[in-house]
Length: 147
Image (cartoon, rainbow, N blue to C red; front, side):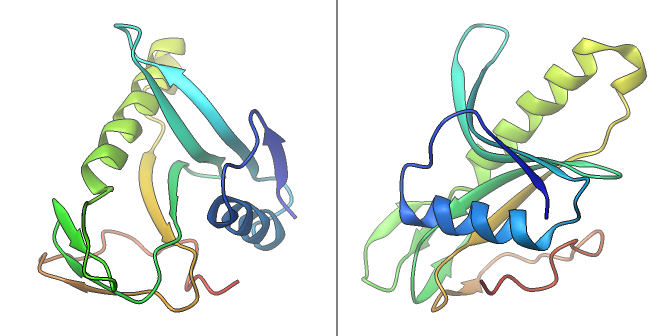
């Protein structure tokens, strides 16, 4: 069971479900920093659902509770309800860069730490249809998310 450090409290059931699942399924020595804000160099603060400190990487995790089939691309998603929302992917990539920058600015020896984004859909009924050509660069440390 991973160690959880709650900086803030989960704001919805999706976050509670995701934090609970990851804390239960990840190894004991992994650390989950949950619901925190980190400012950029210019003072703008981003909210983070979870930052996972793992063996070989730091993962910036965004949790979404969307149910049903999600269609879309990197910019827009069409939810099962028919509503169109901004894709969380661009913001997640920006947040990942913020974390990578904070880590590398803390120490030159940390500049090579691998920081990766991870988007988790917490609803059991969710699925994706993407118009993005995507090829995973590495095996995910979460094979399939099913709480």
